[in-house]
Image (cartoon, rainbow, N blue to C red; front, side):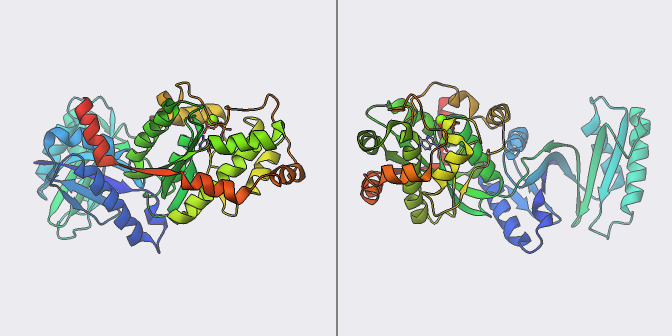
Length: 398
Ligand code: ATP
Ligand code: MG
């Protein structure tokens, strides 16, 4: 009896036309995760799920846990591979359930391999009856405490219990590329993660005001990118020196418009990067009404600087909801560290909460916009983060 992991696909079944494309990407992503644990393994597809075999027994739990971070999976099950034999189903089921507390059970069999003589209903009944007697429990098909799964396929069978909940969403990579404006705060990492969950490959751009702000906040952003890379396996972070441009705005524009002008420039520079990276949209962590720069009006004025769509996955979220997700995905503890944000550098006391397009256009007419964008872009650097590399670093740390 060998341990196996069975993972079921999430939304893929709904998207008929793209199904094989989605499955291929999902398989590629699962393979990347497995390679982080072992050099060899068997990964097989079909029937809306993958079966993972030939993995080291002592790693099974850790691999299953890691797979809960892979978008596109509905659930992850640990079980064993057995012969197509009802006695074996019973004895394995007994072993899997021994030591667990439950008073009701359901057996769920699938039998794509019709060479097996019993129907799935017959298998359910026979194995179910055996377990009821063995453990002194009752069958309950609606709300069982435990479910035992049996899959009879291609000359073998898989028996497994319980499901770890998968991350859901779509496999990273199937929806194309976006560029996320990432700060060290709580919101933008969560917004980025949400887009990964919708199958996007997320590139990152961070603006810093060094030497007026410290290297520390840039490092914090890199820490965040490392965590987010666990969900998409490979990331690219662009770092833009923003201080010169901010100085120019401070010199030339009215104080109350500074933050909006910073933002409009961020968007323009981000678009230059996005075009170069063939990204389809920009992402920010803005939520309506959260701070002065995020009133509906200011969002609109910021949008006018863009020709690409700006998606704001957190637009309708409360801070509490965002913090909850930040904890779940592992970015919370980094975001909670104090950092000096480039927008608080030279921030006005009373920022405009309801800017008009007219005054913004007027203020920008005193600036050489294309030249400032070009200058910042020419000083932009980029760095690639690979999940394999990060895993090795982690092992060294441990
Ligand atoms: P966050 O928690 O993401 O910092 P926030 O609620 O603090 O968001 P702001 O600081 O006003 O709000 O930023 C709004 C959005 O603008 C951020 O979510 C992020 O997408 C983008 N942004 C802000 N500062 C930067 C920066 N230094 N580099 C890149 N993007 C930034
Ligand atoms: Mg912020």
